[in-house]
Image 1 (cartoon, one colour):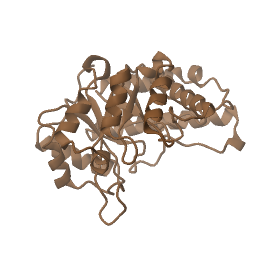
Image 2: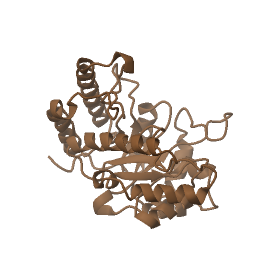
Image 3: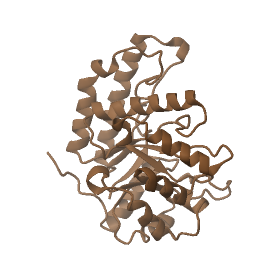
Length: 303
């Protein structure tokens, strides 16, 4: 079992998603920014290895305007060696990585333009993983999308669009149950149609469900992952911030709630991404809990 956190390390003095305004675009700025972002990503990964945090969500912003038509810089060629070196490090240290495209990626939108831009963004993010030499266990995580007044049509539109995606995108794509629109059961319907794995979010399931106990929900989601192609199930973990609106993620790990959640796994192997405000601080505490319970992943499986 691996524990991780998304995108930003609050301990280090760098960001792997530095960008600039579209109006300030130049190839030179892209080159400098990508170089700095990749250097910071390597530092974050090294920090994670030192603290047994072996799951990380890479920022979508490694390449500024990576899927925008304005970006004509040949970043895939220029940084091929750097991306490959990051991938080599990931494999050598038994890390797992993913990306979570921004909310503007909506495959079931009625707008053909939004769908086209969404696909371009998925292709860009998949290309980064390809450059790293990552296999199909490195995933791109999205939501089903919007309801647009008709759940059945919205689900059907996602399925239809999914079937048109390039294979390089499809093999990495997973869908996440959300807290307001599309439940685990909705995601299972999509999976049954096209075979896409479901990245389970425990907190979203607590907010929106059809009465499935947590242990059952975990098993339903895990069964959508093909072990050889997809690896063990990835999931997001959080809990409710007390005193805030329903669905507001906690600012720090509530260890007793985390221990209670782990009791629902009943031996199920999962890689857990903590969506918690204090990032690596909570992730390190979660690793301590897993170490106590002897659930931490092996440190290294390959040279």
